[in-house]
Amino acid sequence: MRLLRQLARRKLRTTLTILGITIGIWALVVFSSMANKINSLVAGGSQYFAGKILVTDATNFAIGAGIAPMNIEAADQIRELDAVAAVDAQIQMQYDPEASAGFGAPDFLLGSIAGSDEGLEKFVLTAVQGRLLTPADEGSNVVVYGSDLARKENAAIDDTVEIRGESFTVVGILEPTLTAPDTTAMIPLQAAQQLMAASLPRSIQDAISSDELISQVVVYPEPGVNDAELAGQIEREVDNVQTLTGAEFDEQVGSFTGVFNAIIIGVAVISLVVGGLSVINTMAMSVAERTREIGIKRAIGGSRRRIVRELVTEAAVIGFIGGVIGLVLGAIVVVFANEAGRSSGTILFELTPGTAIFAVAFSTILGMLAGVIPAWNAARMDPVEALRYE
Image (cartoon, rainbow, N blue to C red; front, top):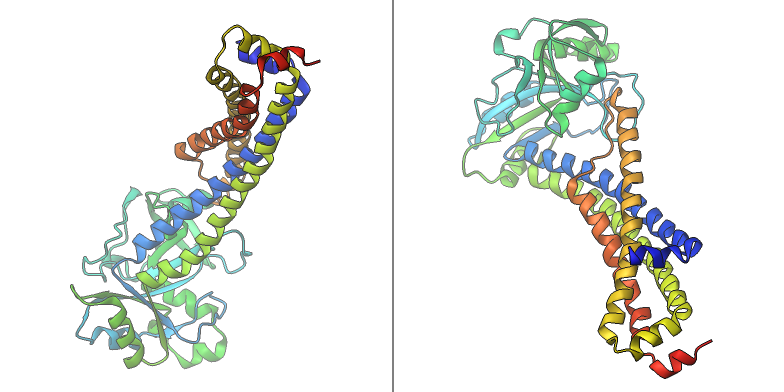
């Protein structure tokens, strides 16, 4: 209570100092929450791509559907390689071709034959409602929604939904995975082939049958096979394809997350500079105003350590208050932004307990460090000179 009374003696100065720290911590909380979401997506993506190789068309262009088409013969050629354990020929395309690009990846439609991975897929999907696709679903129009896309489409089991002009029955909704499946609708391969064929230019439709269409091949290597070596062999022996291994995925997204995390560090540094200078200024003025008080304490036996402890604690309280207010304001922004984007499936922030604790601890320690110099200067005062101070 005594510390709060000391701070209340300089209401305006203390308020402005706390405001400076609050703004810095608010920015730190918001950006860190965004980084948490991105890092969780990247971690999920790393797990998703681990232990397999993604093969796509080497021309790297899109035709309406969002992904370049391939001939299913490429999957047959890959399947014949000795180091390949299983091949899953798929079609992936944008769920809504008219959707505009927003933050993050768009919603996807994924067509594949259930069970093609032959039990080698390590990223296990679980239906929280309904069921997953089965090989018996080939030839029918059924769909399993990822958690975010189901929420966005307001889809429920046994609903009939329209996807790219065709009617599908919802048979399952997946548990959240924090990565690509959350924004993906999964359908049988035959249904996806028909949708892709309908999206292609007439010249291409006339040149290839819909049952020959795919857009990517997921390759599962034999145990002990080096992914990079098999990827190189696929590119050499199969015409006009490119590969992506789990290690290459980590490398590609690692550079992006590195830049974003550097931004977070920059925000923290700005918080350090702005908040630290504010606390130093406040504490220096406080010491100047309380020179005689400090002199009296020293004259009656108060130790230098006690003077330093009192002033550093006062600075820490300023940092703590600013940190708590900044955390609350940041949490409000995160909650409202997530709620605003929830209906469209766009969740941009993830505020974790670790981030909250770090924000308050950072501001408190910042206040303590900023208060050390003024406190040390106060403790070194000569008691007699301090008593004479006007």
